[in-house]
Structures are given as structure tokens and as C-alpha cells.
Amino acid sequence: MTDITPGQRVGEVTVSHSQRIEAQCYELHGAPPLGALLRVGSPPVYAVVREIWHEPLDPSRPLAPRGMSLESEDEIYAANPQLSAMLTTRFAGTVVGYSDGLAVQYGLPAQPPNLHAFVFACDADEAAAFAGELGWVRLFLADGSPAGDSALAGFLRQAAAGMLDRQGFLLRAGRTLAAELARDPQRLQAILREMTA
Image (cartoon, rainbow, N blue to C red):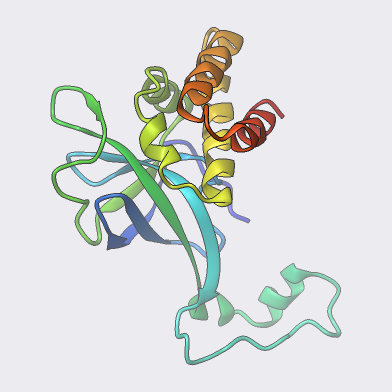
């Protein structure tokens, strides 16, 4: 797994929708973590990583095991240097906001990001500043998938780490989630458990 430096450019958009983006990483295993805030294109669109996967670049060439007589995964890649050129890491993000040139807006942009738009992993300050208003929560909850809920909890944990009043932010986030998920208490409890883990 590659370490991601906050603010680092990690890939480019390969699929772009109003509500989500998919991107390919520049480095194999180089995706930002589940729940990371992304800044995409210019003017920027903001998305939260909700899914990460690794796959062959050419789907017609399935993978075969290569490490039967080796001791570690690192040895597999050392013995087969071509793998890094044959495999890729991709990730998907849920769009939660955009910049109108003056301020960050919570909601969907008028147009999705361009194909090949650069994708950056936001630093802790940018994530905390974006997350503080919580106007993006409803949009993210519309995803409704278990992976999306884990990504939401991860983003809230990461954003809280950059807040001066971590507990106050988590309490406000919990209240916002409770209001949005009043009719789905099991889902609410699962997100709250992950958010405070």
C-alpha cells in the first residue's frame, strides 16, 4: 500500500457522473483511504472516497496465482516487475459539493468533473473546513450502501481529527445524522458506532 501525502495528486477521473466519480490511480495500491475527501478538477468538485478496488488493466487477461513458493506479497512483485504495469487501482467517490469560485457549495455541481480531471487528496485542514457545516450529509446519505455508510463514518472521523473541538463536531454530526435517519435507527446506530470507533 502506498502512503498518500495530504494534498497529493493521486489520479485522474475515468468516469464522471453528477453524483459520483471514478478515478484511476497513478500508482498501483495508491488510492486515498475510504472516507478521504477529494478535490477534483477546476473549479473544484468535492467527493468522498466510497469504494476502492484493484484489477487488471486488461479485463481479458485474468490474474493467476504467482506466489506459491514465495514468502510475501512483496516477493511476488519483485519476481514479477511487469505486474505493476498490468494492474491498476481505481476508486469511486460520492460528490458532496463544489466551489462556485467564491465559496464552497454543498450539493451537486451544474456539470460533473471533466474526464481526465486531476484528483487530489485533501489535507486535514481542507477536510475539516469542508466538513464543518454538515450541509453535505444528506447528499452523502442518499448513497445508501453499506460501503457508503462506512465511508461516511470514516470521513467524519478524519474531519473530527482536524477540528479544534473534536467532541463538539462529532456531537453535531451525530445530531444531524439522527435527524436525517430518524426512520432508520439501525442504520443510524451502525454509522454512529463506526464514527466513534
